[in-house]
Amino acid sequence: MIKGFINLRDENYFFYLDHDMLTLTSINRENQNYIDIFFEVLDKKEETPNVMEGNIAGAGNTILFFIKRRIYKSMGEYKFQILSYIEYDNEIKLIERLSMQCKELDAFYSIRKAYDFEMFHPTGEVNLRVNSLDSSRDDLSFLINGKSIRATLSISRNVSSSSNSPVTINSTIAFTFEKSNDYSFFMKIVNLIKDFLKIVTYRRNISIEQVILKEKNEEGTYRNVGKLVFPEEQEFERESDKLINQRMIDFSILKQHTADLFQLLASGEIYKDHIPQNSKDKNIITPARFILITAAFEWEFRSSYGNVKAAENSSYKKIQTDIMNHIDVLIKTNSGKKKKYARTFQKIVSNSGMSLSEKILKVLGDAEGILNKYIDYLYSINEIEGVKHSDIAERLQIQRNNYAHGNIDKDLDFLVILDLLVLEWLIYVLVLRKAKMSDAQIDHAINKLFARNFSLEPLKE
Image 1 (cartoon, rainbow, N blue to C red):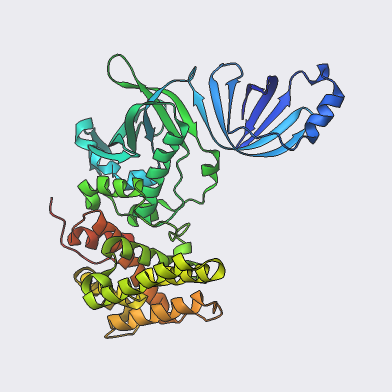
Image 2: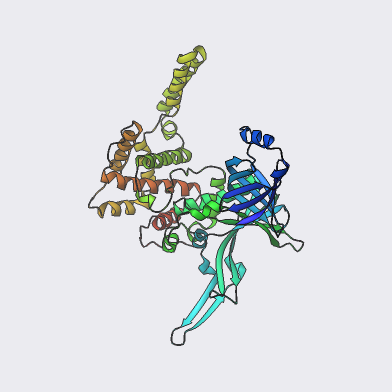
């Protein structure tokens, strides 16, 4: 629990923070007119501040609270739920670097590269060598809203002589940028690394409990000046260490394309709404999840291929253009409901083109060198031989149409569940190709992320 003092609307309060609940109690209420207090409580128009600044009792450190919502207000007391808070080591500083750690990052940028060891079983002797910093560091660069960002992946070392873990090693990612105190910008960076880890793990429960804030000192190195803390992150259901390490598209696969994936995410070019909350939810197929997965595929298809039918078929493109021109005339010459109906048909025609099954067939054909072995094995272990791409595509389209037309009572056929797994692989083919990865890298990515357990040729350095 953190305690201290805060000023809100020219009144002094004592505060205490318990997890994500911030309580403010007036220090000098006894000196105020209770009639004024009564009418203040009745005031429903009082705006909830987005940010509140206080000082921690004893230390005097500045603390900034970022408010989610007001929970309660009475005479002399407020309760707020907070999103996060920044605790500075002293006063507010301009920040030039954000640094963070989490278990998923340890798995992505393997801590194993930071050390070597030898163990002599007869004697129990262990020789542990921690490698140099330069041997475990990679730099990336990309843009966020036109601002140049440098990200550094590295492995930190901490030594303690009073612990049963004398050497602690963790992977760290640090983002360096121009001096700033823009909290919304900090949050874009934090959300970016979380989105990145969601993509490479295919789950949402990524927990980054705190971010270290740094400034550059006169020697050109960086020192800690505070921390950004997310109390709600402590409530996430954790995955096992084994699953975190095994179900991951790691840096050894992505390599230089890590920066490409960051840039795609920073530019909003990857669909994320279909990603399940955790590893258990991956195995639960509901109508809503089915629709989101098909929506993700169509979004990524449009992003990668555009309107293939119009591009490849000149007759189709001409007819579509003629119809759109005619609808434009109807929109300009009508009003009211007729104009509204014309706009509806304009949207239908502009979005027309390949059906879902045609899109699936297109990507299956383009990715057969990567996916065919996984597809054949998936269906064969379920006693289905000679599966056809056209059957997979057709079943998925029929099921999607059932749900789209409100027929949510239609039970999922067992085959459609297998088909949906294939569709998830197709989404990753589209995303990773946008990140400029080779087919061999995509092959390794799908094999590891979806635990296909095939023996693949090692990737070339």
